[in-house]
Length: 205
Image 1 (cartoon, rainbow, N blue to C red):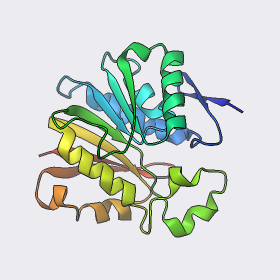
Image 2: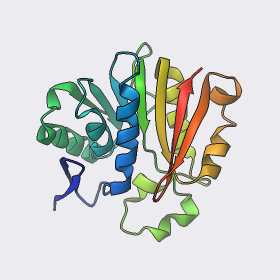
Image 3: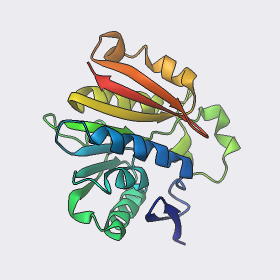
């Protein structure tokens, strides 16, 4: 059965196969929308988009196109339907596929939003109401986050910024050991602790 909930001014449709939108994640939308005001021109990319709520809210009052990527066909169908309901389907493209192959080599995005699963595999039992594939981040919770960071490394435009959602500041610190950061292509410029997770901003250096 399709459920619906308010997410800011949007009404988001989803069902039990898709992660239920968390109200606190509107903070990620707001931060991305703020970055858009000074970012270079170009489309916004949302990785692990689920029902699309975070990206849709982020671009709602801008004129920027949005590209949503998710491996789940169900999530992609809801993201498309939610774009229609938001009245911005004409500038939203939803791509079903793996993070590593959903984008062309030459595609660059000045703003990237990523909401990967970040719960360590041993702790997923604490959230029985959530689809396992939407929350299981592997042994340290960072398997998909690392894949997102690799995509950000390849596709973040010069002068661009990405906002990545994680569970803890300790996870942010672990990601600082990834090649994109140790080799100086990306830098963590700010971390914000929210109600049930953290948001980290990565800038192209």
